Amino acid sequence: MGWISFDPLRTLGFPDTRYLKPDPRFSERELLSQADWILFPEYWQVNALVYGYKRRIFPSHASYLLGHDKIEMTRAFTAVAPRHVPETHIAANTPEKASELWDHMLLPFVAKIPRSSQGQGVWLIESSADWKDYLAVADMLYVQEHLPIDRDLRIVRVGKEILAAYWRLQSPYTFHNNISRGGDIEYSLVPEAAIALVEQVSEALGIDHAGFDVAMVDGHPYLIEFNRLFGNTGIFDGDLRLRNTIIQYLKAQDLPERPTSNHRGKRRLRRAA
Image (cartoon, rainbow, N blue to C red; front, top):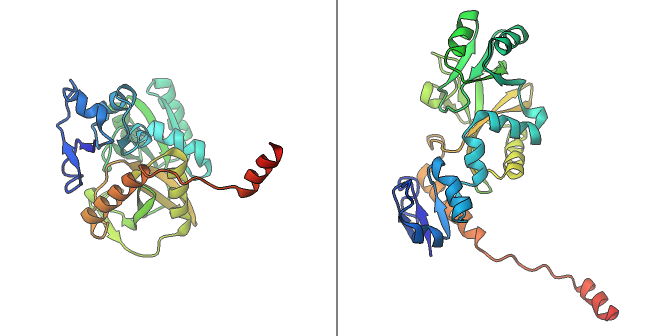
């Protein structure tokens, strides 16, 4: 039947694509139930589309579920690449747990709000006052060791392809590396170990549209997080490359698998008959 998009800006120029506004009533039920692909739905639509309408969505279900919450993301990273996750502690925000973590973590350390992006909701904890400020707004406690870096890597993977890999230099005003928070882009050699890690984790978890943040410490890559929706500032020909890569990837999913021939096996079957 074609494709349906809930994000016209990200799918501008896609062939055979109809645009719908996100609707909690799912009023276009017939269109949704017949669509070959549903593109960029809102997070709150995902479970209804996947489980109720049995539709394929892009980005993938895993990209949505894991990308929505840093706690679930970190647990998934730890499951498939435990050596590449910074020391992380997740706990309920209770006085007892807050005290335990304060006593355990070396200053400075990083504290995060699990559902945030673009560097928002990230604290550098350097004092008890910083810790109290964080505790006042956090529903869950999510703390990580502070890695000794002044830059990190942004590695963008769409479908099966790495579209971009570049360094993000730390902002002169904060400890953030995010471009939206004053960080800068540097195009220089990107370690193969970082790219290999992103490819491995993407395949293992089924993530097909993400900008991964990776820190390098003494040549060892650490996964910080990924963003399901990312800016294209650092991608050469960003809009065009993203559009073409997504279209090719989705079309490839619809190609029938080529049967693998096993002539030797067929001869054995004939003799057995």
